[in-house]
Image 1 (spheres, rainbow, N blue to C red):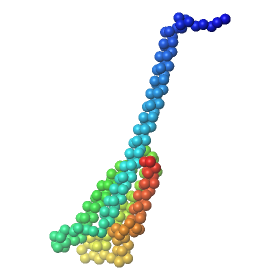
Image 2: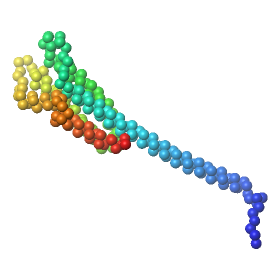
Image 3: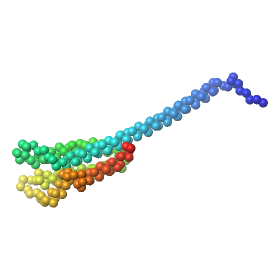
Length: 200
């Protein structure tokens, strides 16, 4: 008994429908895989960009902090001669602080965005940097308070030399190895520690 199929016995309409269905299913599967891969790549790219921006802005904040601490002040001669040296110093520090807070504000936006993507662990990576900024701001206020900028006329200010020297260690940049510079660097390294793995 021989089994022979002849071409005329094949139901071509049914065969065509089966191949059409298989082709459509194959296209849907390939399209779904492509879409899934594209979404994953898009998510990875946006996370990469966010991590890169976080580190870059952190470096900019670090530079702004050290710029505030720069001991070199370029006072206007006419202000010094007219007896407004203290006010001129305050103006310079206010400009420096404004720039630092502008950079910090930009970093805050990235900080919140990273909290959305990576939760509170990303947000808390910036906590030490925020503390450094707060300490610097307070130390600059104390610096001018110790100089009598906020004292009422006739009031005396306790200018204990040890207190002034201790505060000056924060206000003035000495070198990259002073205690406050190390605190700044450690706070930056904490941010780097969280985000650097996301850009490599």
